[in-house]
Image 1 (cartoon, one colour):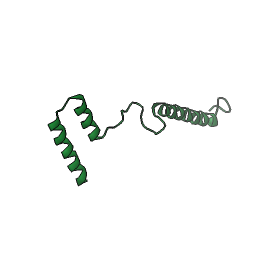
Image 2: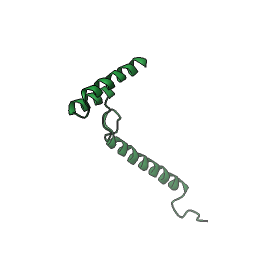
Image 3: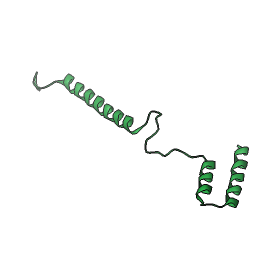
Image 4: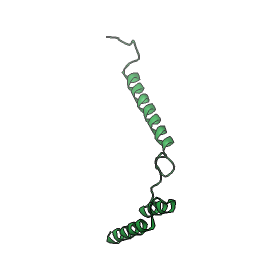
Length: 82
């Protein structure tokens, strides 16, 4: 038994609370630094709609007009079903 020597139980509880708050603050700071104002992660690319991807591929010459028209018709049919 220590009988008054050492920091005591209250000090040990206080140090535990301080460490929990410190770790929480670090986690919060990391989350804030990796997200933009809308809450999206900064390393994620913006999502393109299927029609935009199709138009971009046609414009760059990856696909020809027949494939473009066929794919566009399928996208429109799928969109009208939903």
